[in-house]
Amino acid sequence: MRPHLFVAVVPPPAIREQLDEAMRPLRAEYPDLAWEAPSRWHVTLCFLGPVDPTPALLDEVAAVAHSTAPLPVQLSGGGAFSDHVLWAGVDAELAPVAGELARAAGRADFPLEEREFHPHLTLARRRRRGVRLQPAAARLSALTAGPWTADEFVGLRSGRPDYERVASWPLTG
Image 1 (spheres, helix red, strand yellow):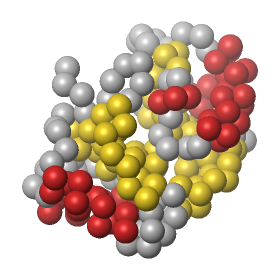
Image 2 (cartoon, helix red, strand yellow; image 1 turned 90 degrees about the horizontal axis):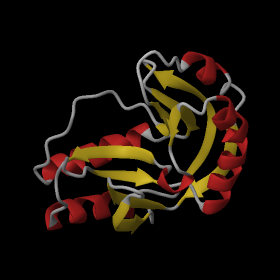
Image 3 (cartoon, one colour; image 1 turned 90 degrees about the vertical axis):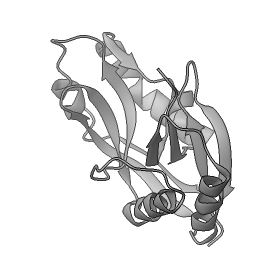
Image 4 (cartoon, rainbow, N blue to C red; image 1 turned 120 degrees about the vertical axis):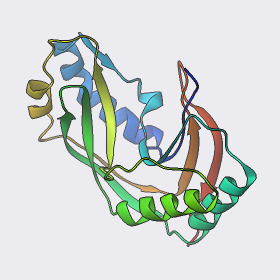
């Protein structure tokens, strides 16, 4: 499978440590889930798919970053997507930024998925059928981590064990 490219904000190490500590009891209680490593935690703003970055895309994302002020972010609560993905909720005004990045990708001739933006940080995935995530998701209602200030967009390419950082853009607006 070809790696996927996306633009994200990444929690700083102190927030990843805080979230990692909060997730320890849940990981112990649900060992059958495929838990994401803290080094892979991010909030996707614009998913581009199995493509390579072009100079036009890099320039367009840079322009959005240049006009975007650093963003206050906090993780709060959580849930599950159809018993497939367990996620932490994101308390931040990211929808306008995600929309700007989608328009920037379009200007660079990248087709995007037509999907409603739902900011989240993926914590775990179901490994096999029959495992229900809803009980674990219910335990996330009191989850908090942060706040922090996201001061850059990061271009990431999927891979194992970690994502490849292909670019970053400071938020200077």
